[in-house]
Structures are given as C-alpha cells and as structure tokens.
Length: 181
Image 1 (spheres, rainbow, N blue to C red):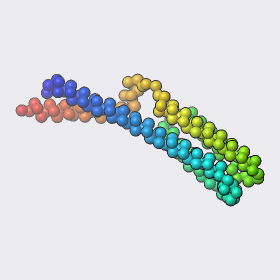
Image 2 (image 1 turned 90 degrees about the horizontal axis):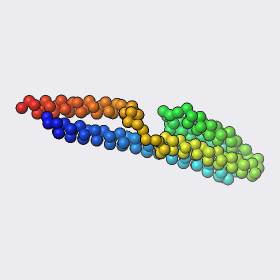
Image 3 (image 1 turned 60 degrees about the vertical axis):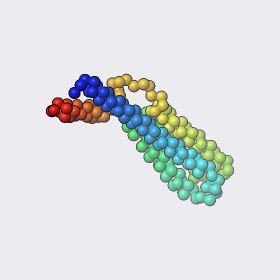
Image 4 (image 1 turned 45 degrees about the vertical axis):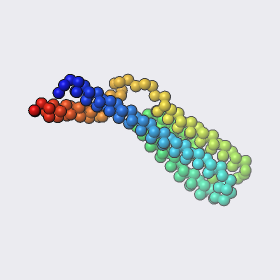
C-alpha cells in the first residue's frame, strides 16, 4: 500500500467523520428548535383559550380549571422533554414561569373587570414563559461559543472511536488484499 493511497483514504474518512459530526449537531439544533416552537404554539393557544369570551360565559368554573390545568401540565411535560440533559438553572427558570401561570385563577366568573385582569395576568405570565424558552434556545443553540477541539472530541468520543477502528480495519484489509499477490 502506497503512502499516498493511505493518506487519501485517511483524509476521506476524516472528512466524512467531520461532516457526520456537523450534520449530527445540526439535527440536534433543529430538534430543539422544533420542540421550542411547539411549546410556544401551545402556550399561545392557552392564552387564546383563556381570552375567549365564549369560554368565560358558557363553561362552569370547575371545567375551566380542569382544562386549564391539563393544558399547563401538557406544556410542562413538553418543556421537561426540551430540557432533558441540561442545567438545573434552566429547570428552575422554566418551572418558576410555569408556576406563575398555574397560580392564575381562571375559574373566577365574578365580573367583566376581573375577567380582564385574569386575561392580562395570563398574557403577561405567558410572555414571560416564552421569554424563558427563547433564552434557553439562544443559550443552548444560537449563541454557543466556538468549542475547543478537546470538547468536540469528548462529545463525539464514540463516533471518533468507531471511525478510528474503521480506518484501522480498512487499512488492514487493504494491506492484506494487495500484499498477498
């Protein structure tokens, strides 16, 4: 096996490996963005649902509270899936934003002024929650500083190990096939 063949083969495999790592990080970023967008749509739907006059006039308070709680629980589960494998500070920020939304009493039916206050408080709490989610997205995907080579190697240790093993096997097979004759 000539040195130039080995070098070409090694550079080709290293190039594929780098493309695989970049593609994998882009897939992760796209998945986080998709989850973030779905949470934001859900929270906006919740806000729209509470601000609907028909809901306040026709639904009994217990039903409104039950539906509201189930919608918040659904959003909380999605947020926890988004935050899997992340820092405690992110959990605290998002949980405090969800608690602020949960504390709003949507079952009140007393007057038009109290309904408007509930709607204003909910819109403010939902906007705060959206800000927390957007900040998490920016911190985890958009504004990442350039990583050192060592951190990239640590993060992709299994992929790099598999690629090194594949290069070794290919070199051994190539050497065996062409040195026999």
